[in-house]
Length: 181
Image (cartoon, rainbow, N blue to C red):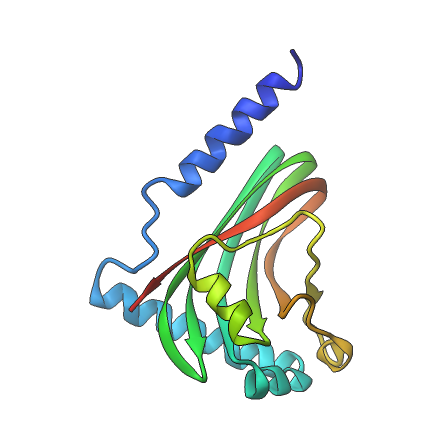
């Protein structure tokens, strides 16, 4: 019976994250604000690690989530809005949702950038049913980190901490949705 309550709480949090969260910004002002945040995130990522430029230059596409908010007290969740680029051009909007259960406490905000090495990987993301398993790993962005980073199954993920403190030893996965502009 003990595992039933956390599972229900996890499902409730995931439901809240997924409901009422439109992928496309609602107004022109919201689209401009998101675009500005995405451009600032890309600039900040390139400044944090100049080797990241090779990913931007060679990837078939990439998704940028300028701010992902994450919080947990045992059960956790994360949410962020972003933009998807194909061959350097913005082609649509995307969202990231995450639910986790385990030993976790705190909150944080971070930037996440996902690079797609192949058209197949990008097309899979664009179906709106793309998800990372719990064992997927991301490279923490700092100077020199991108030099040795590699694609795994056509995808490379980089994160850059913005603010907050999070203690976590949990299992969870990320799910993404996409809408063309």
